[in-house]
Length: 131
Image (tube, rainbow, N blue to C red; front, side, top):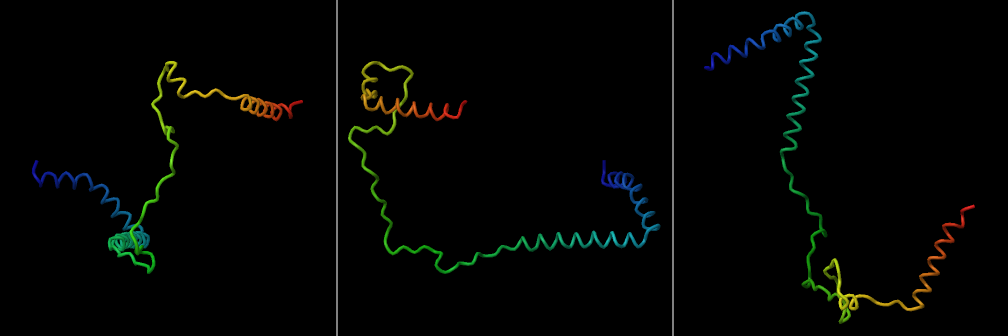
């Protein structure tokens, strides 16, 4: 298909639309001028928005916002951990007895009593409001 054939095809598709626009213009000239003016104003606004956003401004440097160091930064030492402290471990599905002894601490009677009192207080708080 050559260019002339494509042009004819486009003219054939748009000719009914052009005729309807021409008839509308003939019947409503004032309204047509208003619509054309508004469309032109809209296009002008779009062009201005694109032109304004296209320009890139250099950011203004406010005095005092640029950090100027007088001495090099020194990173402080972190908190010291106890000698046998382990920060993390790899969890296992099943432990043998030696591994369990390394990580398990048997609670004292004082800790058991404290936990029992805390649990009793929690139960009393929950059931205290019940009739």
